[in-house]
Length: 393
Length: 100
Image 1 (cartoon, helix red, strand yellow):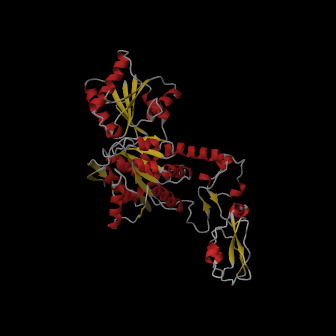
Image 2: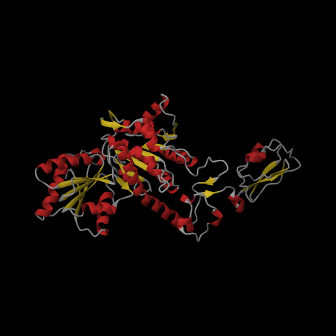
Image 3: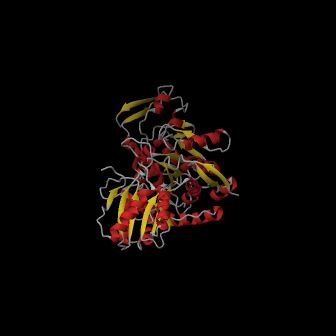
């Protein structure tokens, strides 16, 4: 029986962690994810779960200990934000290359500088090439639902890769919204017990994890890792289907909101998708054919699926909540445009940078983007292909 | 997933390699002369040794062979010269010398 409650995104993820009751959680506090280890510690202190919590001295250590615990045979996880994720950089790659199905609750916050504690996606996007599966949430409900699906995806024998469950700092992590929770028993049955085939603390069956590889082996190892990430796509969809049967809430690689007949589509990640949907609803009332494609799974990147979902439009806006400093677009813009080219789709695409360092992204902003796309197509006005929203200039 | 890693070599196709290059088995260091990394060397003075055997278990590289309850001379193919055995010996029966 589902239970209705109201929670912040951090509370929702902590609640999911309590229900999963993993074996080991090393963590170090950093805004805005601090509440997650804090709340989990409280659950442990109150005897509501028996996870081994390790207070470490840095995020370099929290990710190292997460990998160590996972290699030893324990279901493990940590939580972090921003500079904390940056300090994990080396270990993130090791978690993936050593094929550790551990989890990370990422509460997206901008990377310095300028020093700022608010939301953008520069931390998660900075880790986009570390080999982790990355799933983003629009609201607290999705953060909760995604976290419950994390281990069944990561631990699937076809995958064995680490998974990052992301939500927007403060906007989602600290805002209290209504939520529908599963019963503890339902979550435990859905996630199951962790019984790894091979692990370090396995008497009589010794293994070495992460050995040195000479040049003759590195390309082959990377290829195998890549293929596991490719296979994770089908596993993500299978797990989403099982989750829909349990909860009634369905998920795909992305959500298509009124895009079927849309002339203009906005592609966006995270909490701002809710704002974009509101703009779509208002514009639809005025007869505008607009829609939103909300990307849920950023890694593995569903390039072909996205291209096929937007190629029928007259123009698309690709929204990046981070600057990539490659000087020709944000990460989402670059990757979708590459995907469109490979799919031989010639739809006009404009890449917008928005919401950096917690800057508000409003319904009016979204509406102005749709208006600009329409004007570009209808009146053949010139549009900058890569531009900032709400920039003072 | 467990496989006989002795069958894997530099011609093995990627599909047949282990996940994350995980190595199944233990003690493979025996096959390599890692003692060549050593910069300082412990020397065993058999006449001072009382065979208390405090040294053997603290060696991180199992380079003090014990046969019939008696320690033998060092396995210099694997000793890295860390000097822990020197510190633990109560009888000054091990001394460090500079170089290999």
